[in-house]
Amino acid sequence: MPSPTPIAFAVWLTGLPASGKSAITAALKSKLEALGLRVEVLESDELRLALTPSPTYSREERDLFYRSMAFTGSRLVAHGVTVIFDATANRRTYRDFARTLIPHFMEVAVECPLEVCMARDQKGTYKKGLAGKSATVPGLQDTYEAPLKPEIKIDSAHIAPEAAADLILVAIRKRFLSSS
Image 1 (cartoon, rainbow, N blue to C red):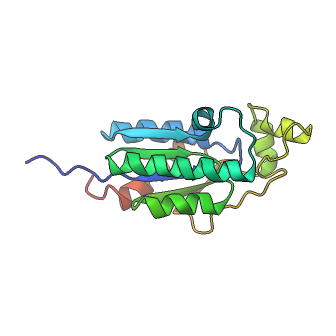
Image 2 (tube, rainbow, N blue to C red):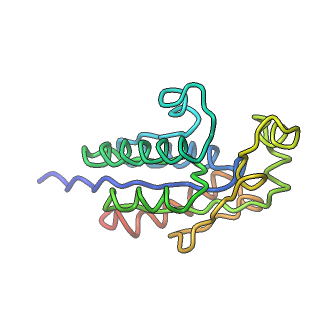
Image 3 (cartoon, rainbow, N blue to C red):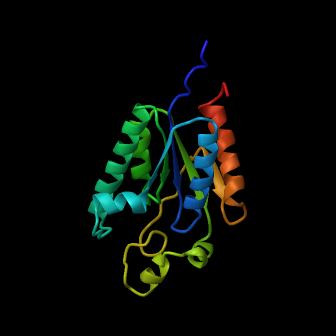
C-alpha cells in the first residue's frame, strides 16, 4: 500500500531586508525536496519583476503585490505544491492575509539587528535609503511589523542558514509531516 501523500503547506520567512531570508530559504528548499516534496519558492524580488516591473514601493502597490503573492501561494498549495515565501512583507496584514488563504501555514520570524542587516546588504537597499534614493526601506524609513506569534523565530545574526533551515524543518515535521 503506498504511503499517504503529505499535505502541502506554506512557510513564510519574514524579516528585515538582508536578514538572511534567502540563504535560509535555499537551504530549506533543498531539505524539503530531499524529503520528496514538490517545492516552489515565491521570492519577492523575482515576483515583483513580473507583477510590478517598475516598482514604486508605494503602500498601495505593496498592498496589491502582497495580496497577489499570497493568492499565488494559496493556489500552489491547493494543487499540492509546498510553498516557501521569501519576502519581507513589512506589514503583518500581508502575512495574516496569506494565513487566511492557506490552511497549513507557518510564519518564521528571521530576526536580525538592523546594523547587521545593513552590513550584509549586497543589493544596496540600505545605501539607497540612506542616500535618499529610496524612501520606503523597511526598518529604515518604513515600518517593519515583526510577527506577534510566529511559529518559529530564527536569530540569523547568530545561527548559520543551514542550521536555521534544520530548526525550521523540525517545526515543519511536527506540524505538517508527523508521519515522516
